[in-house]
Image (cartoon, one colour):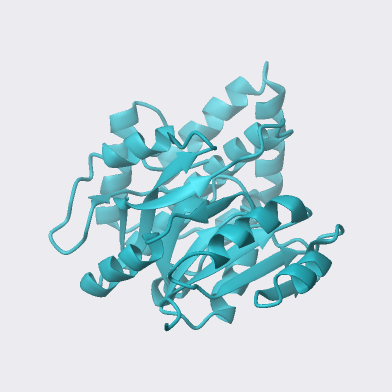
Length: 297
């Protein structure tokens, strides 16, 4: 049996036990995907474990933690036309990669597919599924599913050429809430981003505390606004975060880290083309907040 046209990239750091579970699921898939692990300079036994227990898995031993950018190293290492992202706590349902390949083959403009995500042993639907399915952007004649401007990274599959054309995950964001910016950049380059619930991913997130994540999410949402949205929108979001920082320590940290990165964001600023900005505004209006429907954090 030939390997799947969909390869899998996993970005990981210091989570060898969970990674081993993910690899067992992925390597048991009927599609037999090629799997690349982009290791963000782990200091645990991640690389030893893979070499011992999963010798068929390729490891990219990154010299330091690249965050979400590790996925781009994995995409470049693969030569499959399509690339599925997993985290070290997520994997794909049997048949999902085959279904995704059929959708990409049939729709040449499809750049990224957001799957339906089932969470934990009980396989509860992730609340994001409904947000994506209800996106007011609706369908497009030349795309499957529902158009969105966001996704959950560990439940997404991309066309390799589209991902590289859009530049991949932005290095300024590092990790957390990095998906919306990539969705913007894909759409700005003419690629479709859609939610296709017939493609299923499983996610078993660690239930422990995620110290600092709320601040990083808010930081990256604001940086995304400065990188791609109109100045009045970015300024309004900055004012809101500044007001929240008076009483919220997460907001204070987010504001401080945003200001540190703002010069780099302004140098990399590239406002969205009008049709994509219009879609982003529609999502802003739909949620009655400054966040994007179909975004993931």
